[in-house]
Length: 187
Image (cartoon, rainbow, N blue to C red; front, side, top):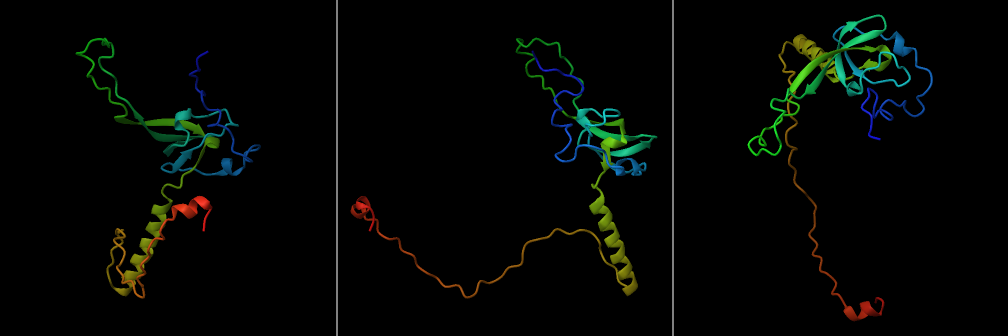
């Protein structure tokens, strides 16, 4: 029998609960507050069948566009291939064999509703927020001292050069290979 192509096909391991994380769902999942514009990671919880997104969206990061009673509206980018033109051509015809089928040349913003059990706050903007706070502190300190600073990130650049001191040269010569002693079993 050929493999099925259902909604949950090939999700045996994908939707499985992690090791030692089975059982009840923590209350934090339900008490968390989401706001429009927040970034969330879609991580399917296999124990909750309601409001489960399609397997394609598992592991994707999206932006919250709607908040309802039990679900979150998430906007996720999906890369799709464009409509194929001339799909009814004959393969035996040499004239039509050089038609290129571009795959993955268009990104669509998909809006889906996902239950709160299947989403968690994303940490994708965490570094940016921390850098923003640090830059604000640096700017405040510079303004207090009456100077202007640049908070732009700069590339690390090459490592500074150094001189090697105290190194001694030692000439190493190889030991001549003795075939006769090697056949006898060593020296």
